Length: 395
Figure 1 (cartoon, rainbow, N blue to C red):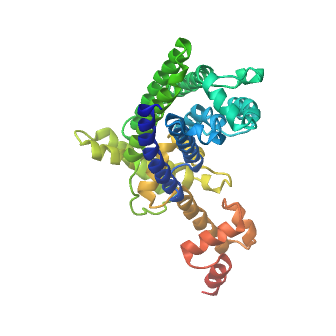
Figure 2 (tube, rainbow, N blue to C red):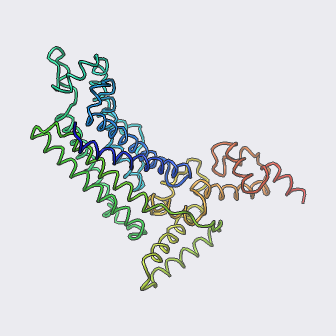
Figure 3 (tube, one colour):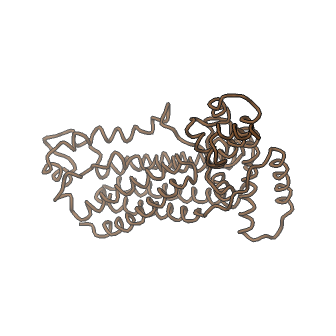
């Protein structure tokens, strides 16, 4: 029984479950780029499963219930990728499982290929394997990732994705095209600071796993993984709580001319401001970011049927996290609520000034389905599109 790793895992598990529930609530409220937060949810779920397994082994529960031995290994080896995918999403680069993106599944599939026949063995053989690391009468079990070789595999994946995070940060700080980020302090700098700290933790964890694997201290797997999971969860919890903030009241839709005028005024104000406290500086940066987002949106970007937060942020020269924060705090709603206001406003003018079919207007203003269009339109105007057109024509 490894009491220390068991206690460490139990504490980290409690924090992970709280953070998992909080993140789920965050997603349900529509805050942030959903796919980015789904990666965070997946990462936290994998961390929780790993911590359950560490507790399971630390207190020798596997000797009573061997059916759960190595059940989560194929998912755990995906943790470094999920962390990288979450970080990449924070920087506005969403990872999709298509094309080259499918290569990220290889480590999990590799472990799964060896674990499936292992899961089919009798419980007594599984327990014997856990004590010896292989079974003489089943030579293939020597290739099932366990202890030192399992640590080496996780270390290699952690190092690889640490390098990918480093490339992502370097590209952000030194763009190849010579452009500069619109915002370089406040919320954006905190995102970069968080990513740098997580990157350092990834490197330290990878080095620790490599040293344990090379020294033959494979039995220290539980301790290394429990400490690593605890550090990772602590960073995620700190960053999550640091960014949580309720949105302010809705500021309304502006014309393109008004948006550009306000944007110029905001830039002028930013150039002349001096000696303001940090909270005012951050608020000004968020407002400037929101004005920057309004420019491409008011210019017609909302009419793209596949418009996403990351695409809008890229058009405004912002990272996704800052764009999401600006929308949540300045619009009074989430990304889709805000974009739909522009779409409904455009639809209202088309319903009045043209005889186009409502179904055509629905797609022309950017909606993907008529049902979504009807719900959004009625939410804003209190009427269906047909009733709105009929009512206004009668006046």
